[in-house]
Image (cartoon, rainbow, N blue to C red):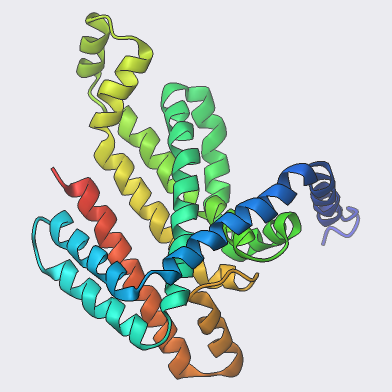
Length: 279
């Protein structure tokens, strides 16, 4: 219909930009790929070397106390972890947990300050909101392309893709939580001579804690949802048996790996929910 308009070479521009970034910032990407990658693998190996019953005990006891001494989550955690170990997926579970933990920590480290900036500046909010919309609506598979270009294959590109995909909820909820703090409380703090930093750390962040933790909960779940996708670029974990089962049409193996991911997701979700709902 619009043949008279020449095709805009957007794909070529993106390829050129990616090549330029890889070449220009290789001094950053290479150490991240090597040293940071080795560090993450070391954590996964250390967790894998711990006897499973010790980790089960820690998780079950933690679940019991974090839920107000209720047995529901503790019992589910015990049965679920025993099932995963019984199916021979314990090492994959530890790799997946390491991937989710690191991606979630980095997302929080990046997301909370950005959310604070948005809450303090309408200009920053107007600029960052469209970026967050882009990050959340872009198909997750697309993030694998720059991740592989920057970091090759392995756990680091998986964390990079998860970081981009999972950060927006923390940013949005931090911004929302701080903006919802009562104006009267802010004015009272200012009247008593509080500095901007004092008002932020002693009033706004504590008052917004519940909302921020809800955002962190969503970030953890989104990071976990990248497990299967990240396995396509060499990230170890529970996603590998899922992809392998898909390639070989093995419904049973895929089901077992999928159930294991669901068990981990429920445990992590209930843990984070209990933290921000606890009075």
